[in-house]
Length: 340
Image (cartoon, rainbow, N blue to C red; front, side, top):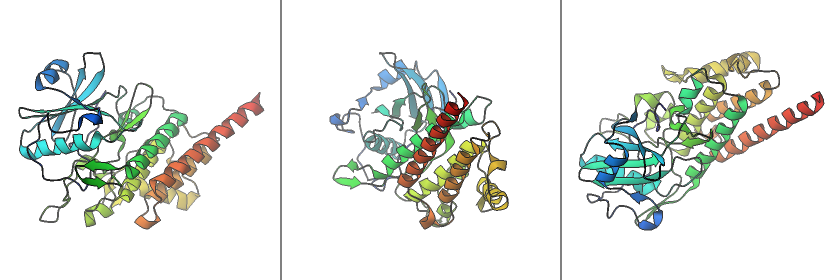
């Protein structure tokens, strides 16, 4: 597994409730009824064998593989720094992510915030991330790609509608902020798990007007974001549109000179040929698959519209993808029956 949590910045949700907090500790951080386990520093050292199995790096954290006492495999995100800001970031991440429970979102299992150590413990995704699979020689049928697209969309729908409580503050419309193929993890059953929630504080812009975002994620960012420094649910929609284009083409998005080249190439293909077939991954471009790939490509271009109001909601995207998948499955069944 290359990076359990993707190549991503440190992990804190883009929630406008990043509050000023006292120095957090294991004993006071998360209410017991949220079912997130508290680990001691000694326990973390034991189940990671003193951090002996690194599996990835984040923006300011390292990720290690570990094994709990019941043989459950886990991914352990450990901050490289021990300053107060980093501890607050990890504290807020644990507070928020302990409330986000969805079968297609990577699950927080526990945390340790003790003796200058900041650690988050997550479920382990055995097959690594979607980017590594897409850009390898691994067989990757359209059926699997459709399942990943639908379930990731459903995870974002949940994210955009869930309610998060932090003390007396309640927040809805949680933005992910870093929807990329490296941040879609794949478990042993080929089920996608959305990870990599961006770790930005309440102010996205510095005093000089510059924006905070990692270069690894730049290729997936909404071009409107650097201009205004405001993340909305439609920013996630844009990034997810790029994920769809990458899924059907097996080509990485590249942001250059104010535009995303993958979007531009797909747009030209549709404008010139009336189809995106020239852009599709040839390993899945069969006669029966072209219509469904075209439907996905057109949906992705709606998601990546330069006009945010023209972009669909994630709920609309998820519904449309499910319709596309169901229609494709019915056609396959009908063709199979005809051949028999």
